[in-house]
Image (tube, rainbow, N blue to C red):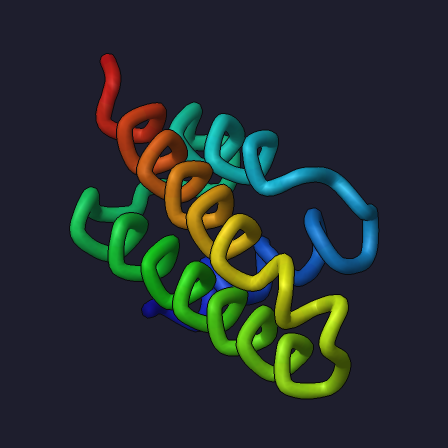
Length: 90
């Protein structure tokens, strides 16, 4: 994952509170410069891994979260599959 993608993600999604779909659209549009397909997809997979880890951690904290873990994990994986597809579309 490139440091620049991480900086852009932090600014848009964590500071400005934009959703990750907007991040993908703006990166794809070249608003922040050029990134290779491989770098962007690897970055998205890293964010997905981080989110899955957080979901699992929360599930261990409380039984109610544990009950939702499978569904939330599936929804998160589906969202990232769609993000990768969105990025790859012309």
